[in-house]
Image 1 (spheres, rainbow, N blue to C red):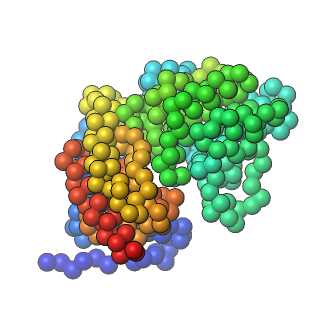
Image 2 (cartoon, one colour):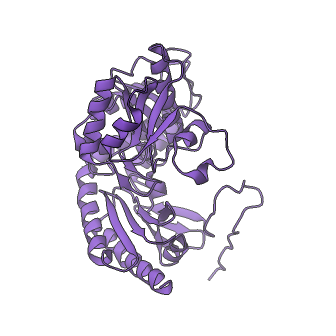
Image 3 (cartoon, one colour):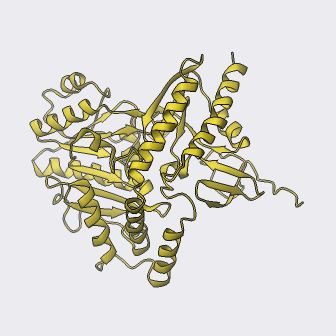
Length: 402
């Protein structure tokens, strides 16, 4: 037997921006991954809601190999035919009209904020403002971290970008009160399910009320579907449970099944705000990323992964509710489809290492919420395996702190 490869707690050459666990992954297949020492893990994190099709999906691998041999990158100086193919599909699935492609969710959200500002300037508003929400996370650029609610993310990066009005989630009366008479507001920006904020869904009624408010006041309705979109909740986009259509919808994460990709989908009200020279990207819309997006959506449809995610997610959530609600220290189990959170009454970051030692990868967000966002191909038996590992770990962790 070969000796285990030691993994340093911190690299001497990589910038120290992550509190990494001392493990390094080697390869994966389906919902399983293996580290460089051969230890196997069940992937309950999916690269943070990225690996839609799991690892090593044979159809995706073949398509990407084919594309790499043809063309990886060209430039947006020229037409990229796969952009039109993927844009047409996203328009079909969303009921919207046009798409801009970038490389990350942060870039997509940044573009959405630029759209909101230019929308305002085009109407003669000198200092446009955007309504954002308590608990929100939209990224770590200067503008998106300003839109984000977490003070820890703000710390050390002031002065923040102005132009944001923060309001409570799921409280339309508060939104109306805090925006009444403010002629500078141009948009409302929210996650249909807050991911980094602790898996907090916006209610169906609240999303409908926001749509009506934006129509009433001529604002853009901008819904960040970076983490909760691409089938994760059992519909293509989480806001579709409310039966509404936004004006702007940033996407990323699961759209490329691991290949970096971002997109901003726009409806008629926002589709023509940007004109040549207003926005751009070097890597966005490259042929490799576009092929990844096209193949991801095609495979999802062929495998009926939306229905699968809803079914397996409901099974997983029901099991977690049954076994954890009522346990002292467990506050809530919430989420939809395969985007679930278990909230404890105390910080629980220690569960990352403990669950990894037990063979399960997950994350802890908002300090006290265990987050599960596995690949959408997760099977019923793998969902049961998550429960069989996670529940005892949570109970043991809580009992040790009692």
